[in-house]
Length: 376
Image (cartoon, rainbow, N blue to C red; front, side):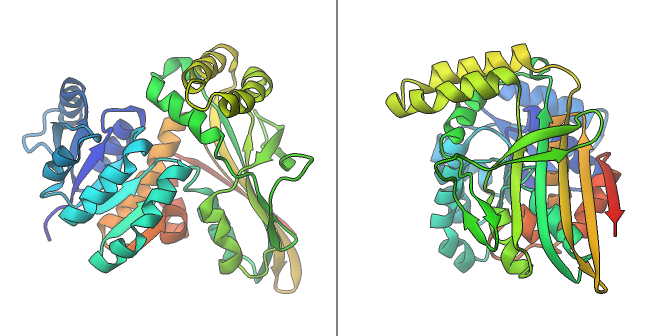
């Protein structure tokens, strides 16, 4: 069987490069690192290939805004992996992938992206292609964690997932494009949660907040509900669930209470003109006010019944580097795709398509810290 060829859009970026490193280490796939800067792609490809006499990494200049160049680049490729801030070009990428007949994977969190991909859902099935979306750690891992713990119960009743993202933003090159996409996504976030057996949207009191104890060094923190599509499928998989949801922790006091309070009214009054100044204010707030300890963490707390006895489980996944924590689950998902065990026609989310026990096992092998707590 010939080795798969993956084209990574944004392959020299913060997440793309780490993803390429992991795929080189744990698979035999051949990689094309693509982006607007050929110079950057060449430099990263050279570093990744090292002294290999049979290099597996090829650089390529590619602009996702140009459908013709996408079509040419996709020929001879098995899958396009979107690891860059290109949500606005989702239609171009998906459309050209369908025309050429290649599979698709992304680590882009965007409601608009999801709506575009759903428009292609029937065509994806008919052409027999496999499109995997919402890769990375969130979305991407919360649903995996719930499914992983759910196998331990006879009846699982509650499963909440909380997150901490406390990154040393100053150490990363947070591009203006990425910052703009972050701001644009905030105004489209759906803050509903699954309570008493139904999905509930925020009422007059605002979104739902919970307190979750993440342990040292982050301890007990407030988190706000944020709907993920993968969480929406869980009550169907686990019919005994009455309470579930994903809850995202705070950034820092300035971003939470100044930037966010300004963001929604400004974008409502100035939907186009307000995006750039608000993205710059957010980047400044992240760089200036985010203090140690740094790290990225997901915690799933589940409860239910096992052998007629109450059981509570807590699964924590963490890593100091947020970009690595995005790349590792994506790589673990792609390993299952590359060996053919999860490749099937249709549009899927990483969290629901993958085999959760294997993915967790591979994450541990890749250096993600994993902790399981049990109480009866």
